[in-house]
Amino acid sequence: MGIFAQSLIEPGEVTGFIPQREPMLMVDAFYGEAGNEAVAGLTVREENLFVENGFLSETGLIEHIAQSAALQHGVACRKRGMPPPVGYIGAIQDFELHALPSVGENLRTSVRVEQEIMGITLVSARVESEGRLLAACKMKIFVNA
Image 1 (cartoon, rainbow, N blue to C red):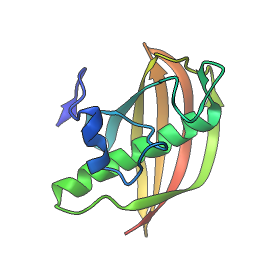
Image 2: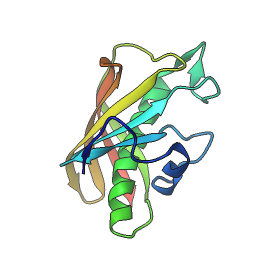
Image 3: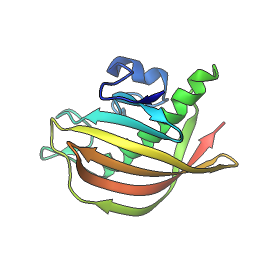
C-alpha cells in the first residue's frame, strides 16, 4: 500500500476499523502501511479527554499508541472481511517521553509489528509531530480473536 502524506481514512470512518468510540477515540487518521509498519495520526483537540492545561497527557500518548496499533490491525482485518477485534495493553516497555504535544498539533505515529504469537502482538512505536520525536516505546497487546 505505502505510507502517504494525506490520510487514507477520513476521521469519521476510523470507527469502522477499531472498536473504540468517543470519548476514548484517540486516532483520526491512517496514512498507510509498508510491510509490518503502519502510520496513524491524531489532531490534538481541546475537548480530548486526555488534554490537561493545553497539552495531551502522557496517558493520552500511551492510549494513542495503543489505538494506532489497533488501527493497523483493524485495517488488516477489514481486508480479510473480519470485524476489528478488541485488544488490551499487556505491558509497556522502554517508554521515552520527550515532549507533550499541545492542542492543535498533528501527531504521526509509526507502529511496527515486531512479533505476533498466540494472540499477543509486540509493537514498537514512535510518536512525532512536525518531525520532532515526542514519545517512543514497545508495547505488548493482547488481542481477543
